[in-house]
Length: 266
Picture 1 (cartoon, rainbow, N blue to C red):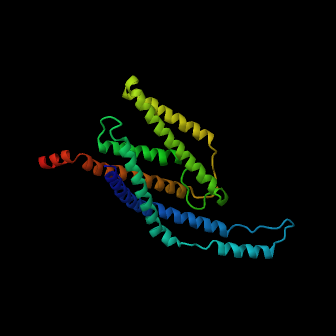
Picture 2 (picture 1 turned 45 degrees about the horizontal axis):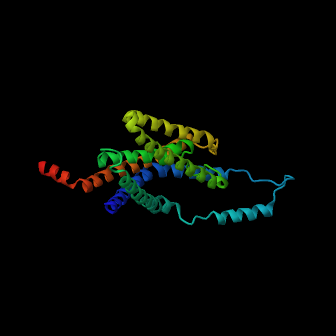
Picture 3 (picture 1 turned 30 degrees about the vertical axis):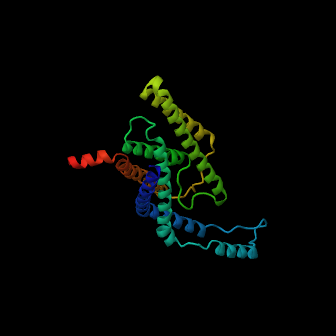
């Protein structure tokens, strides 16, 4: 059963990745192009540095310019990045997330009461969207090119992953606690206690972790907003389609008798 669910999860994740690619190509890539154009224009108008005595360091500037020119050559062209590169990335990501999603589904199915496969898949997809993307993005939102210092990329990536792990751990612990309290306090009160715990963990993490604000003052606000909305839409489409499609496939696998009866009735 687990193997069959895993295969279906990867298939559903692959389809979700293809839908994500369509969203990214239509709504995300134009904002990336605008951000790159801003970065190139900003670099072209940046004044040259001077030495301490005010004179131009001609030889050093020429060597640095030559090194910068050759060091920044693209290993993969922008055209490939926005087409085959993007498609490969979202397809691999979707299939991997689909496999992990199926394993989580297999672990939870039957442990959360009388919940149908479709409803469990939708609830799991919603929880994954909130924990993996939405909550971490409240603290560290997605940024297009031209935002962020190259020297801080490792720190920014680490902080985002840390926020994501805290969010995942908080939601897992909150659900486990809520399930333990059902017998004593009932479904609604137990769910509220679990939700309050998760919100408390996230608020503390948001306050404790450092802020990162490296958006240039002259960066177009519209481009930044549209890029972040495109990122949000891509994640919503990925997790929403994964939950819907996997729920359908899992239901056909788990309840073949009921499905056959419905088909005969129809």
